[in-house]
Length: 124
Image (cartoon, rainbow, N blue to C red; front, top):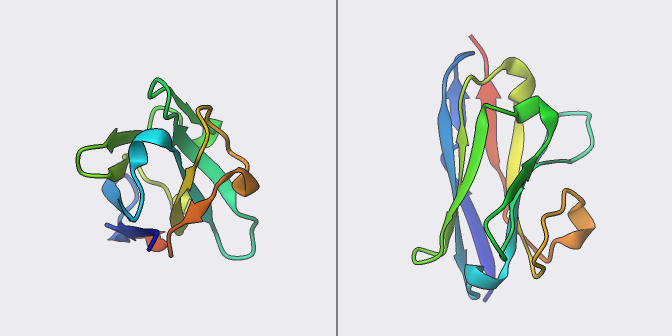
């Protein structure tokens, strides 16, 4: 059974950090480009950052540049999202997703598998 399970969300103060994890089961991450998406209340889902399967190159939206980092540990079948200098506008449900492709994409329909999401709330 293919599954992606996110963890690590929670409540954090502005300027704080969180690390999200996404553990895959039922398939091998090696051949999948992995992405993190987020959806804030009343807004459309947004592709935040991704890491390609071919060369681990990463791509991200400008709003998280210098603050968010994606990494993968294929031995653990896990992808991570390190989020620093969090701001209230980062509040959203964060989803990890897997795409059987070699090139990063911020387009949701390009992804084959999705996690259930984890809530990140940035508030004082």
